[in-house]
Image (cartoon, rainbow, N blue to C red; front, top):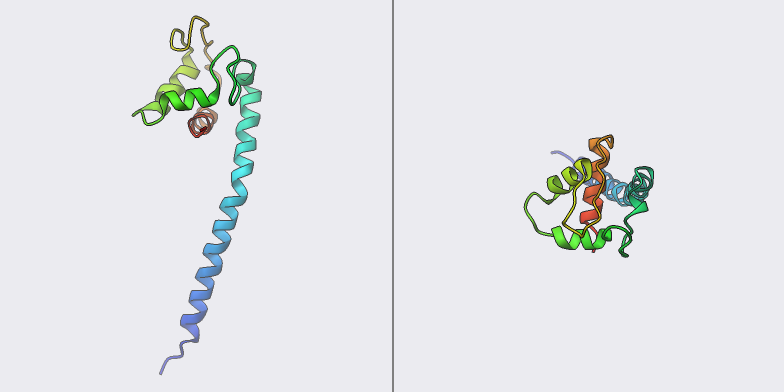
Length: 116
């Protein structure tokens, strides 16, 4: 007859593993937010944009509200940042930023679209 100790040990190991995984994910969230904040500063985005206040361009919260729920919003914003544009938010054009790496663009756009 087999002992239930092995089954109990496996259950405990799984619970510990998933608990550690959840704690690790929660711990990484502020680091990711800080990383995006660093990127927004590094690439000069904050010279024209703020989280919740219109500066030269719209606030990140306004951008998120405008694009929330729209199909293809991420791709559209990535293209807008990379290629620049004008007319969507007024007469001041957004300059192109072709040297921003795609990974950074993706992270920044995901963060911008998460603003509420």
